[in-house]
Image 1 (tube, rainbow, N blue to C red):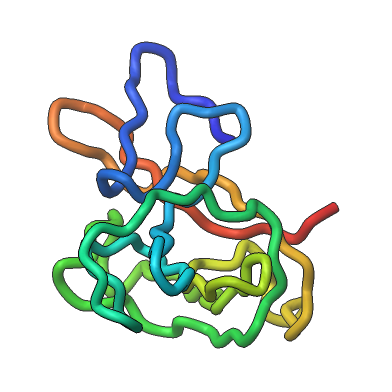
Image 2 (tube, one colour):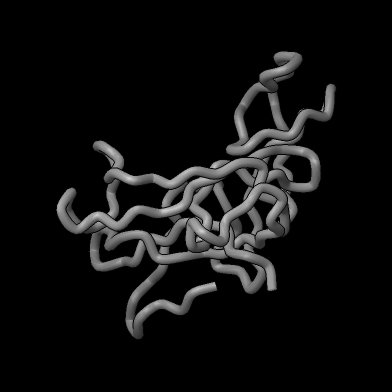
Length: 146
């Protein structure tokens, strides 16, 4: 969890992606009441059976790295992080398997030399960019579990 600057409000990068503010934030997925598939992000209809009306499900906070790579170039528009192509710093991006139910793509807060498949990681909320009106936009990532 990250603390905002005094007088700053933290807002999630997207509605209904994770619980915030929360002492122990969770990603919000969808679970089909008919076939039980879990998705992230949540969708209105089940991608497996087509049932309309997914239930909201708080996903596990801890998972394992399923695969990873290094994002070596600045993502193209509509990427909103501050900076330019010249000052972009590569970061680790991966898929994290949560509770054997769903894999989530996210930034991994680890040095590439330390990243490995099977690494246990935990959900964290991090600053992403400045929002409208001076708010601080926050997003989710995964950090090695201590």
